[in-house]
Image (tube, rainbow, N blue to C red; front, side):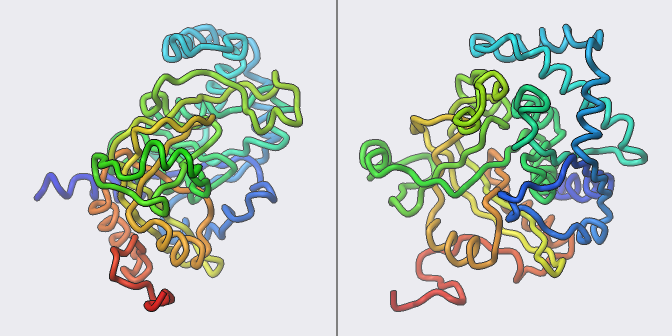
Amino acid sequence: MIHEFLPIARAIVGLQNLKIISFGPRPNNFLACNAPIRALYDLDVEIEENSELDLLEAFQKHANDPRIDEVVKDMANELGTGNKIPQVLPKLAQYELTLLDWIEGHKGSRQYVAMANKCWPAFQTMFGFVPCYVNSRLTGRGIPVACEVDIYGALSEFIGTCITQDAVTLLDINNSVPRDMYEESIKGKKFECDTYTDKEIFMGFHCGNTASSKVCDCKMCFQRIMARALPVEVTNGTLEGDLQPGKATVYRLQSTADTKLRAYIAQGEILPVATRSFGSIGTFGIKNMSRFYRHVLIEKHYPHHAAVMFEHAGKYLWEVLKYMGIPVEEIDYNFPKGDFYPTENPFA
């Protein structure tokens, strides 16, 4: 039982020693990820918010840093045959050193750091690349870096990192699976955890922020969405590949507009099904997902970002959230068939 408590204890001690560092305001397109940060103070989590001008200045000061070549070599070894755009690695290495040096210079008395950094729309034109791969590398080292200045996403990732002592990721969960793909590769098949209907699957996607250890056949690529309107060369820097299949816990801790904390947890799996798409992406299966999506994620105004642990860790996370003072009625999960959400039509 002591060993069962260790993941919970790690998360509580980690939160007591955490500082979140952010760069830039949240883009208007991602207002959904915005929330009051007062709840961080209630948790005794330090927060340092900076301008992206501070980040750009620090990055420029790292030009010709003598450590860049060593970091480039490490990146090339990590990417292996997936090192498709080697010319961008020096800039990415310069950026990685910028973030690591900022962390060391600004963490103060805190032992752990998570980050929530702006990554577009001005980032790529000012820096000349996208930061996704660097975000993935730091996350793989236990320093979660959330995209789009998602502060509560970074907090969620950090908790998952403490619980699992492993890399986590942050994904959009508002992408559907094409019908023909479901019919060909998923319908009627028994996977590791269960079988899934077409209403229990979704695509978990982000540009390229997932640690290489959690991606199959990863490769350096450009950001295809940004490249529709910008020169390709300034959109280089994503880590692409399908997520490794296996058990997964999809979850998020979020502040409401009136500064109350709430959370959700749903366990499922990443299916061994090729996504036929781009980015860091996986096909997820979670039982009764469509009901959960409607009556929890949408109805309670959760943003489109979810943190993902690559194992079933809901029992630990539930206890951590209780220790953090979140009432159990504010911790949601995917109800099984036959159990109705408070606003669900029992006759439908």
